[in-house]
Length: 331
Image 1: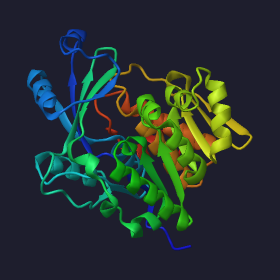
Image 2 (image 1 turned 90 degrees about the vertical axis):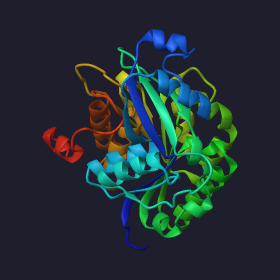
Image 3 (image 1 turned 135 degrees about the vertical axis):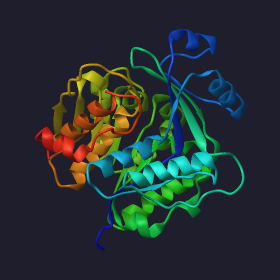
């Protein structure tokens, strides 16, 4: 097998996060359900932006957040995602590269603008997301570099890519390229609504092309159409090599074959913004896995990264996670 150039390649929707603190009356005014994610058009995006208070703009997207976290731990991360050659495209590129991620996807010169997600954070730390997908949904096979896929230990992809046929094809081809090169593949199920839309094809993919599944409790229960977490856990155990199941304050459960590990969440003083918790958990876990750590230790690194990111606004770490891990005695 050829030597790896990257520990993890992340593929996902390239989105700039626009983060703002709001109160419940703002959500009510715009007919928003707290804690949910909805897709919006460009007109709605402009209306929300005009009515928001001060905001922070930073590159985001689920797999992008994971890539940034992996790089912060000191692992070699690469990213594929579609942006436009515009101002927000500049923001996305600068942020990701400045965090040590290799990102060289070709920018679109026409068509929709770079995607943005308005992340509205209420005082309880809950986030309500309104996402204009723009250019990111135009990811195609032309954006997948086979050499980079073959040179990454793990190719990690987000379920949101499944919503558009061209991106879905790119996702499937990337998984096959990785497997053909003797590498591992991973998927995050993204959200329970995404799972509801694509349940049958997700199950087929997981059973045939995916080695590692990341999901929260709601997503894994949706996948197997059960309200019982334990039943969903036993089902996914049979369908993939490793399942990483997060349960918010109840920590995480990792299953591999007939083995299971339960790892507690790390305590923090206050949840400021839950955005990116699952993405950064995946970053810590994947860093540990590609470094040869036991699975329960990988989950402890995931919990460390998740706790850090929910302690402040934004879905990217504000500290060097490698140093943070060493201070915690985990690295």
